[in-house]
Image (tube, rainbow, N blue to C red):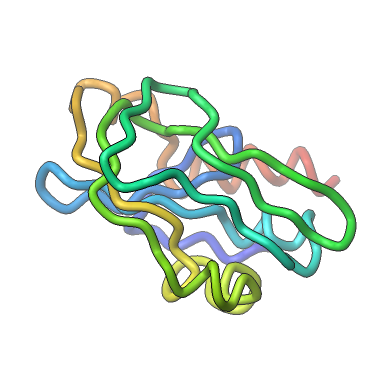
Length: 130
């Protein structure tokens, strides 16, 4: 089974969210990177870009497919992870650490309640894996 850290929140589109005050760090889950295979290119938004809940934020290209990732919360991009532009394989090797994608300023904290807990996400991907 995929690694699902208990301190993060998740979406059904396989993004993870680490909330720190009014900022959220976003990446794709271990499950998502396994489904994609080896990530060879990452397209990220620009700092200052604003997104609404569920807007496409960028894409990940692997040897098998191109997958978009979506805004798990509305907000403005504060920072992007330049390291994944240079080393897209970080998304595969360390999806919850060095392979994070963007940091956003959360616009509407009430949206946090729509995210899945680690246990809910584990149940959700169990259906995928069976």
